[in-house]
Amino acid sequence: MRLRFCVICGTNKNLQFHHIKPRSKGGDDHQHNILTLCRDHHAMIHQVRPSDWNNIKTLQKEGIEKAMQQGKFKGRRSTIDSKEIKRLWNSGLGATEIGRQMNINRSSVYRILGSPTRKRTYYEV
Image 1: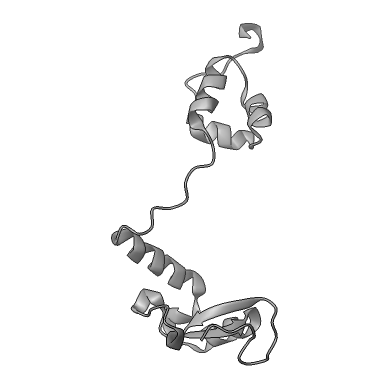
Image 2: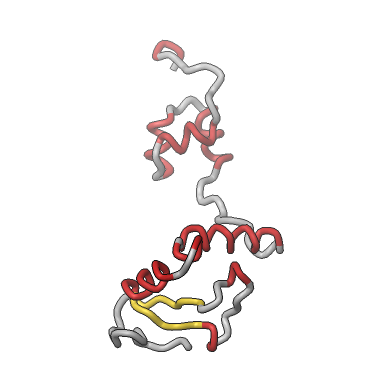
């Protein structure tokens, strides 16, 4: 049941909801399948479970894969405008300056551009 305190220690800080039967294994979000636990007790519960059930990252991965198969999860949307990066690059700006203007790291600029076919030299600019 979703409560405002950990059912083990009673704290109201760092609360998480633990699924008794994980969603990746067919569990649901019904109140009878949920325990409210603090982060420490949630980790403790997962260490007690057998096999992969004690690894929260494995459970998340399984859940995401299942949701993707059902078409419910499509991943995070891109927050970087790749068309603007390409436009700035073609206008002659370098990756560092593009990164400054768009408030992103220059490695993100290079990732979106792929590896440019050739690097510009100083005398071309």
